[in-house]
Length: 405
Image (cartoon, rainbow, N blue to C red):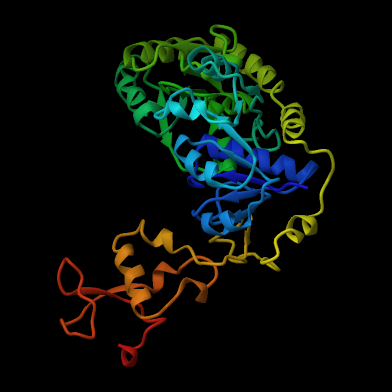
């Protein structure tokens, strides 16, 4: 029996992470729970039926017969160092900073027809096509009032293109007075499904997409779609049939499409109906069948079997504070996530200070409580650690008392 390890660079709100979590949820339901390897906190924006491990702990638990799946180029090195013989790259984009990854002795999985073709044409690599689906228990037309002229945009700039829509908005409002643009980001699944459902039009302005999940989710919620021609959307987005497809990075063209669709109620309604019909075809069941066959999964495995092979892991721990970590389960750690402290201002100095006072990572399980860490001024003395910036040090009242200094 093999365990399945998905490698995540982070657990934040990204489409690529959502696909990993969808894989895990459906594999857990039908076959076995997966382990998500990441030094980030367990996500609080999506339900994930998986076990979460920090990277150091996972590296000590992987065995030769396990399977490792990664989906960021820069995680290839971590995956290749693992003892697992079955390694997979889940290709979710066609933009790659390190093209040498396609020369590795691993198997490749593509999430869309375009990604599969691009991988073959540009790198000579065959890949298994396991098409993305959508969670139909979340993404459906919610019983909310659809706003006339309400245009929803996920507020991410850069290659996600929100800045192009903001420029287009200035043009649109000169021609359509009732147009109302709603920009939001970092929404959980229920929140974004409600925004899709309330939108008259959803604008998806990305410059490139490996699959383009938001466009399909918006269709499933009944929004009329305007999308840029970002390539990965070709499996579901068909110009003038179920959406308008326009050139990316072109605010003038985007504005023209918005104005035309706002002024054509009949076309918006046709796009809604066609979009709902399209979204209905993208179920996860068939894709998970293919994934399970590729991974060699044949039967439902009890969780006790998963952990029986881990001699050093006897218990699991969950966090009951729903405001902090409502979803997922944390496997007991050998170490705390000191690596996370380094992402915060002064975090590296805090780690050094803790180690200086003999406070080891094994002392505390779970995530560090940043609220218990204060910056205080101390006069320079031999018994204090002086930071490079001056006489400010990090003082940890919950661990170190004045008498200990």
